[in-house]
Length: 78
Length: 411
Image (cartoon, rainbow over all chains, first blue to last red; front, side, top):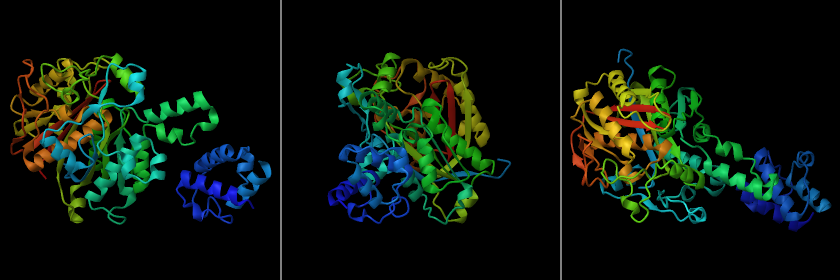
């Protein structure tokens, strides 16, 4: 798993949802562990697209349950 | 009242161009300070707007709220949250003091999330759909301030958002009175919030020729009842009060600021922006507030006026006061200092009225140097006046011909 992607994603989550970047770790669920709602997930996805140069369609976004899911998707699609 | 129910005020909160809370606002008002300052926004020069001044918050809500919370709220919602937290804490409530199904929130706004609407429209135009925030709608909806406060307090007796232009804040308090009197709620958090100092409202009000253009003397621009008045000054802020059924408040040992004895509402049916110069609708609202409160007009010592510093409106209000109450009340117009907070005005000025009764002091009308000869009532000018008050009325009127009068008495 890319540490650069993880740390970049953690920065976005901190900016959008106020979760400390250190708490944004691979095994965490966005909804259950980090208390991020669907509206904030849209913002996080848009910022991640810009930061990493990937496309995250809505049907893919729905599958990204954990931080690790997102990091893996970004790493393999950028 | 025959029902035996009384409505009392147990908590106050505000953030205004005079101060970040109720105490600092009240002190600044009595000290003769003005909240009006030059606007430094880039759009003032960009569009060469004729109005270059506004009454702007002293304490920015983003300094008070956590960053992530603030970014999810329109500025009108931010100020509502700030004022509501103050009022709720002031009332001494906590998680267990009131059944949430007996708690309501009513917070009005005149314009709603104008800054969000314009900002997001710019993003759509310039950067496309992807950049539009998924929070756009909950940030721009005019029930947003009420909804966010209601959610925070988990209020379930009802969450409402009256929209009646510059009467919205007062109408929210009138609505709270009705909910308590009818038995729908024991406690209501009510007030108004407004934060629309941005290009379109300023341009629109300017084009309607309703705003002061005294740009070279910002602190003297808002001058209700003065012969040299030339329009209102746009302001921003929020005022919120906690109202309770008296028995409920006393049972929990709450401190009581005063009593909202009666309310009156009416509509002019005259013109979309201009008040009826004969003040017929306004006087009906004032008279109704006294009637519903069981107050004899002779007992009303003071009227906290809506007077916005416009030519027609200020005089029409005094006609209405004379008609409904008589020529004995002592008047003041807090907009001389505060500017016009639109949908928050009635709520902030209701707080001022409550404090006037509590402290026995009526603030001066800032910048009233030469009383308009058409005004034949006693308007406080120069410095505050000490006067023992049994009852006082707070007027609020809005574009559309909305009239609201709130009649307060000693606790």
